[in-house]
Image 1 (cartoon, rainbow, N blue to C red):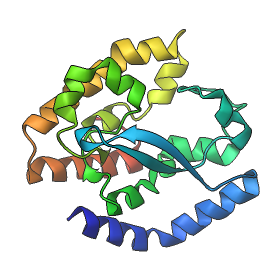
Image 2 (cartoon, rainbow, N blue to C red):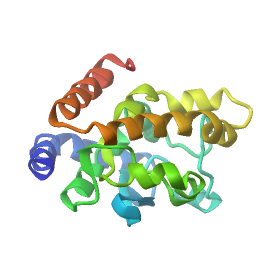
Image 3 (cartoon, one colour):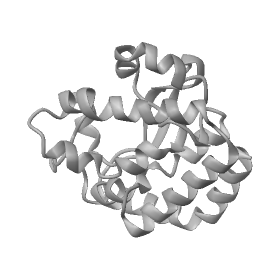
Length: 195
């Protein structure tokens, strides 16, 4: 089902993919895609694929958070991040078997290590393109931009709540809940609201 949905979505969104690729190339030099190591099912590592939203020369800074940092995010990238269109290439991660359409959002290794016990439950399933946490924290960058220490706030406040929602999902996973999350995700994209 995941593969079928991903294929249909990629075909349907092909014109949008092409438009975004052209806009990224016009806006700044560098690769169209950005890859980052994430932790998947059973702690396996994979390369998450996104449309590039930052200037290539800033990757060496290796900062996890860039809320409100206009020096790093390109003009097109700002729009892509706000609308979540930068995440569309993750459909190829679904085709590769790294991710599902619905499931807990994949995290970077350093945060998985900080919450090892929680992730031992969460990583029993494949990470997904969307879950209840990604809907609730649709404006995560804006929230973090309004804090004095974004990384600390993420670790102390946001990530524990995300993990709580992820564990609830894993413990009660079913087709009906997945369909509900897909519908909520679509609604949040077009209506720009959260859960």
